[in-house]
Length: 300
Image (cartoon, rainbow, N blue to C red):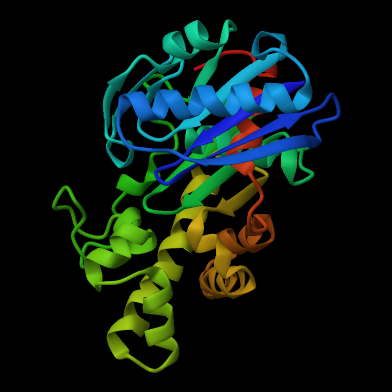
């Protein structure tokens, strides 16, 4: 059995997978704030899952953890996880000491990419991009069945790509970045409130909200286009909080792609719309992916 932990800003989700990859135990706990709380929660969920499985934590075949922030997966360190109150945490080393077993630490979006690869029936697919639309916007890449992090761990950080010179400014003062167009924080910077609030206002006819919604759909479609044109992945799987829109989001993004296809034979030849998938809600993708880390060879 393998255990995977997804440390989020509010809650920590954890799962145990059996030999077939099926979830046999799951657990959710509040994460807490700061180094001690994050470490304590991660330790507690693994120990409780070990109790549920009737084994010691050290008897798990592997333990993997996905966490936001800048992660050095090789060293197991986490930095700049602002939503967790963590500036620098040697999470891998400390967890190994607490649990008596080796632990793999990975960025949460990368873990979710690996989870999507295995979880949505795409294990036979050679390549996948996981596009996370949450508080921020970023992607994780699985190429040849393995995570691809890039030479400095920045692979998939497409939220910083500028696509609209006349668009709203991002946190760096740059106009029209993907993250400001199609993430929770970016939308809140354009209009106070949540994405749900913006969508409700747009449905009621608010012109400002309608414009923000249109830019969001354009931004998601542009992110898919960038991922396919740069890496030519077989599929792009969309997850994160905004993906809970489900069919509404999928139809709108495919509509943007169809408009591009109407004027570009090359774009039409790529079948972008057919490559897009959306994860079902509450799919434990990042925790599941973290559990697969132990069976994924290390590579940049």
